Image (cartoon, rainbow, N blue to C red):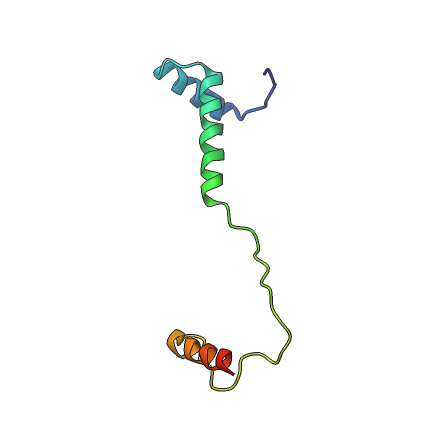
Length: 82
């Protein structure tokens, strides 16, 4: 595809010099740079928001420690047996 872009003069000179040193066309250097930029952007992209499904109630029961998984399992087993 053919398109027209405006580049800063210093950036254009530096890019042309890079292309000459590496025996590449200006277009291929610009193409490579854009691909690398987009690839990096995908790596650093923050994950989307996660919507938590909650239920009605008044929060955590008194005495429940959400960091104590063993105690939580015991509570859930006691609740299931009733």
